[in-house]
Structure formats: structure tokens, C-alpha cells
Amino acid sequence: MNDGFEKSRKIFKEIKNKLEDEKYSEQRKEFEIAIKNLITQYDTANWENRFVVGGALEVLFCALINSIGFKCVWLKETRYDIKINEVKFSLKSNFTGTGDIRLINILGDERVTWNEPTLFFISGAGIYYADPLMNLSTKHTNDALVINIDEIKKLNKEWHISIKIERKPKNSGKIKTASYDVAKVILEEIQSKYLITHLPSPFGKNTTSLSSWWKK
Image (cartoon, rainbow, N blue to C red):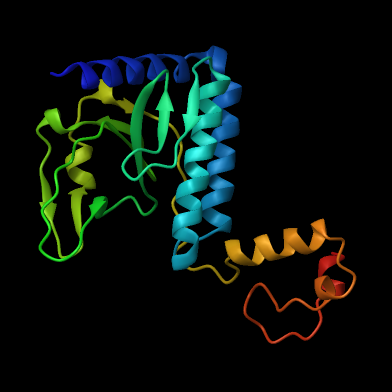
């Protein structure tokens, strides 16, 4: 095992021990509620939401890690998402609890190698740690290097944190979209008098004015 994975494995075990300690149950509970709201309100069935939900998950997890005594920094790098106590990790998620998780996006016949210690957030299962030296099977598809969730679930309990991660809704009539909320926040920041009351419906209905809707 190289030094990089030795450090990342050690940090994961320290995180696991703290999150499973009753002392930090309130922090854990708050994270679970935040993740539930994120997944159910910004359904990733909407393609736009997939990028935003992924980024929000990184921010929320970083906040959780900081709250239990680690130093976590949110990164904006191509292959790494957060840095915990100076060790970088990639974060991947699946909110259906089945199928494949994309490790690395690829173009054409490009061949890539998975090199990053990775935290997997899987609905109905929890958080798993894995790295390329754990002999997990991956495969190339037309546009990505992927790993199947069943492969990740084969890992020993020492690489798993049992934490509640909600499944995304199968059928949602009211899916929030990030771009809509950003537009609304901007109008609120500029103290809009006119545009704020004439936004289109966030749920796709043909509504000329939503002034009464915002007052609810």
C-alpha cells in the first residue's frame, strides 16, 4: 500500500469511529436531515440538479467533518472534491441504491485509471470508503469508467459507515431546480419590486404572476 492510501484509510477509520460515537449523534442526525431535504427537494431526475446536488453533498459532508473535529476543505479540482487533514478524497454518490457509479468521465476511446481514495454515498446503504488497491472490479463504458454498487457493498464493515441516506423520489410532481432558486435569490438580493412577482412557476405551469404564491 502506498503512503497516500495508508493515510486516507487511517482518516476514514477515524471519521467512522467518531460518527458512530453517541457523542456526535446530533451532528450526524443534522447531516441526515440535510441530505434528505437535498435529495428529495432537488430530485436528480432533473439533469441540471445532478451537478448542484453533487456539489451540495460535498459542502454538507465537509461541514459535518469539520463539526466533529477534523479540518476539511472543499476543493474544486477535476479528480478530487475535498481535503481532510491534508489528504484529498473524491466523493461519488448514487441516490437510487442500485446500478453503477461513474468514477471518471471519458471521451471516445480514452482509457483512464482510477487513482483516488473515494468516499461513496449510497442511498439505503450509507458511506463507503474504497481505493484502487482494494481489488474492486471497474469497467469502461462509452463515456465513463464505472463501478457497480454491488461491488462496493462487498467491502468489509471496517470500510462502511451506516448512516441514513434517503433514496430519491420515484415520482415527484414538484421538483425544485437550482437555476430557479438562484434567480430568485438574486432578485431578493437586489430587492426586486417587479421581476420577483412575475417569475414563471417553479413547477412548469403556465402562470403569469406568482405574487400570491411567494406570500404563502
